[in-house]
Length: 336
Image (tube, rainbow, N blue to C red; front, side, top):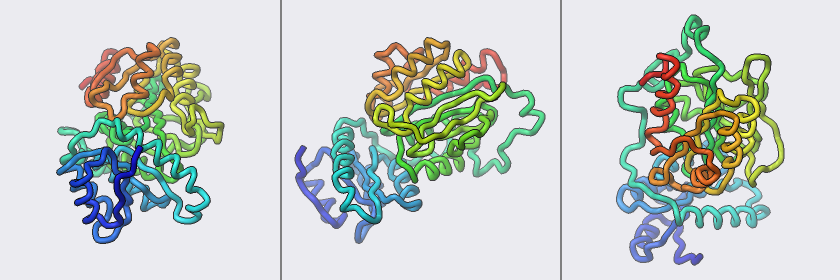
């Protein structure tokens, strides 16, 4: 790896990119003359290339970082506002790793971020989203959908959830993300989707029409309390170098949910969750894996396929429809 240039001014950076044609750039959100988001937006429209954002561990930093991922950034590194000198070694290691991943990522030209699916109203236009009490009584809590993702996953998860109806089965989600960012991620999805989306809370009952996102820095799994599925959120050890880990969520689904589970593996680097997804399949689940062409990084989906965990390998935009059609084979509520 070679650093071919550095600029503390976006206008200078623009000329350096033209001259040096780098494979990857790292981009700070906070810069003089033009902020990183404006620069990224123009870059991805005119000259799409792999970008790793350097963000701050603040609420505002999280919101802006999610916007950067929506605009096409491959990944981000979160730096502390204070004490950066003490953590520079760890920060440098993250930057190097994510630059290497970005170098092999599939980059697409981004035109307009999706704000919903054609014909499907988003929450901002729906008012109250909770089904009427009579409808809740008819919904089954038996089915559970489990989603795992890493690099590129924030946008991939959004595309799946946007297509889920308000009375879909409960959805458990593990996206590799540090503490301080998952709350903003959940809030953004909640503003766009017809289902309710929030961070998982330990002991909370998992309800139809709701999606539960693993909090950053915690392990998330599902358990059963009587006839109900519940969230288990705990500190736990790193698993496959991650906390939260897809392996933890999928393994719990294999043991607790069995044939009533649906697994979805989306874009991401590494092999987290592949073995456990095979355990889900062996326990009777039906599993969907994102195909290579639509992935930002094909690592986790590839490993799931190599482990024999996939029932179907599909483009990202086809996964929700296939899932709803399968659910609809036993209930007219989910037909599309």
